[in-house]
Length: 449
Ligand code: PMP
Image: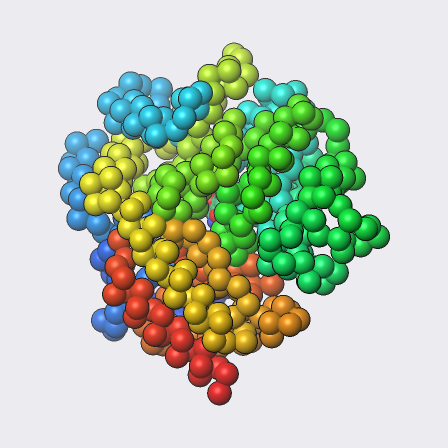
């Protein structure tokens, strides 16, 4: 089929309106993938630093995972969790063994949105409360319930499923206490004592947190959701102790704490297998998807036996959740992360990228911030360092397209679309990182000229 015909179908019949094609000026027609590489229909190779949105964790068509999938395809594709079959039981045990006590009960879904929907249901059943809090900049999915959790207005529709979902303020280490122009002068190290929030004098960070909750959310809470490092929000990281303080406060209000590990799980952040471990907290529930099965549709909720009991006599059923093929693939992904030391590689190459990108930040006026952990990296672009105003979309698009034309695919995110997102398959090498750094440097330079 011709490229024009493919674009025509895409425009009229396939996700029309709701999803713009990335690189819409000159779209990439992807045909094939291997590890950190993609090829288009003309045979042009791209380095994939976005991994299908932080999903292809161990590389496109990873040979080990592909072999497992092929074997399973010949044995059994589908049966549902109403039966006992080794793949689901064995994988549930394997996944739970990677989480601390008492997070040992697993429910399988097909996506991150489904996992978060189920988490909301369980939190409400368990606590008897209705209200759920998420943070500005968060993304938790596209299903009706999950769009209520997701903060960005672009994803929201006037539907009742947003009822009881409160998208509240989120600390902004780059721009000051809660972000926004009023406290741009608050440097990172004094974020706990920012004195320039509107209408206030000096506040300690924790007082401010309590005040913010008291004025924006109800007194009885079902759950608090947070991504340990925001993904779509642009690799937003929280200040030290933020999650710890918030978890304590939420629990005082009768709620449970849920870590959305859809992007940060499975070793992506390097030093820890789960993002929450970097915050010294223990969630009551963890939701996972994306990297769990390297692109095969799968998600899960892992929680405690006590919370799981709140289903009571209710039946929860998911036709495809935990099917044999998904479980076999996910199990092989876990083995591959371990055998091929991919978590260690996330630390090594991620740290290298962060260090080298920080040098570019110091070199260019329009690179405002470089942040993240492991291979969950954000590069926030600004008009200039003094104002920290977001680089406008047209300028972002120019650098983005140029980077692609030089052979590297990256992502974009952030509240204003001002942050480049680097989340490659965890098999990338330092040489790949060097190639990307040279390309990105050139793209920024081209824009500046
Ligand atoms: N949570 C997070 C943190 C995500 O990034 C996403 C997807 N971008 C989701 C949930 C929803 O996952 P899915 O698209 O698989 O429904």
